[in-house]
Length: 157
Image (cartoon, rainbow, N blue to C red; front, side, top):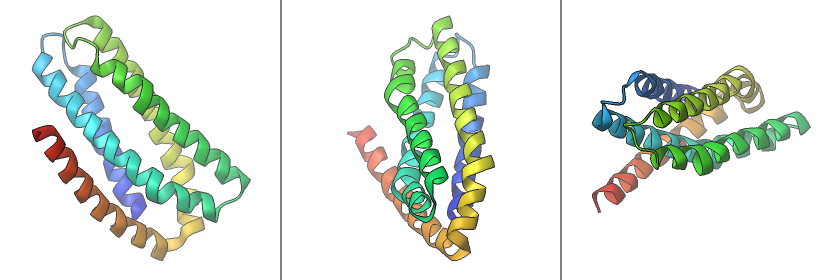
């Protein structure tokens, strides 16, 4: 699977989890908690794949316009990973505040996904070419399996 296809499949999973989370009710505390854990795992792994593999290759192959896109995407990741998601995790899932925060996380992530899929990914296809994207995809699949394994063992500990 090439890198773009793999990341786009991740995006679909994240959007599905976000939809389920935003449709959940304040009574569904366990469901909300499970979905939030799933979302965090997907985002954590996805961010690593992009920031360690795709983004550096994209930035290196590009020019100033790609540099700007690279830093904007990294900043959006930082906002979700360091600010919004930790806040959401500390919010009681049985409250209206949780629903409000889910809405903001969903909007931020959907905006980020839309920009990547409509701007960065098409440019990456042109700049990197099929062979490089296949190579990155193989690296991502291996890295993803490794991260999932280590995250699962961290959760079990």
